[in-house]
Image (cartoon, rainbow, N blue to C red; front, side):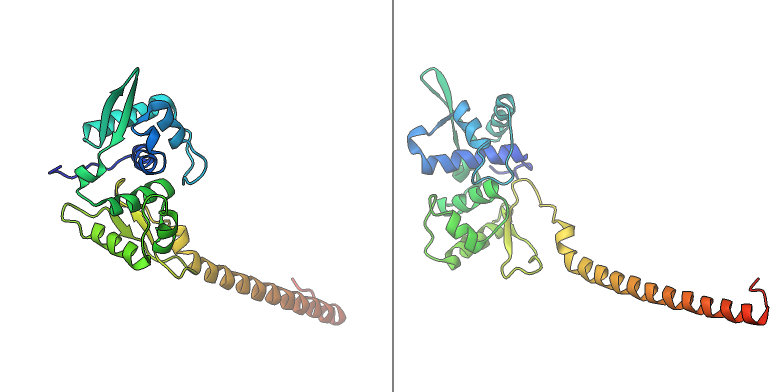
Length: 220
């Protein structure tokens, strides 16, 4: 396509991902029927997030993707079957498709996680080869397809996310967790100091009240 793709919905990326995944893992059932695609979209394993899409919702996603040339529709006997057209539309190699599919199906992952999880779709020799294809997708002339996310506190590797649904909303709660921890620690210390001060004030008031009583002087 000569023009950029619009941002896809979660279900649209799930449909695309399932088609590309099943093409590699269960080729005998590819192209897929609507029922098979529905099961793949609502699959509980190897999916993040897990969804519960209806048949009509999956059909609507297929229709939308077909209008973008991302879906190929064929008639197989009595049932319509569907395949993906990712390589031709995005002009990327099969290795990049495999990585993009995993990101669409399982959410953000590190290069190491992608290499392990990608084993059934494409066997990458090492992590550097994964990173190489990821970098290629970030420098794509027609627009980046993936992005490297800021490192999470406590993590040793950065995660990657796809851009098929637009720029991902980075969880500020995760990025701010370190600051939140410091703030909570400071708040706890402040509360402890206040409690100590209140205790000291109470003791002083008691001492003052005792002295006033002995001197016959009213506190008021």
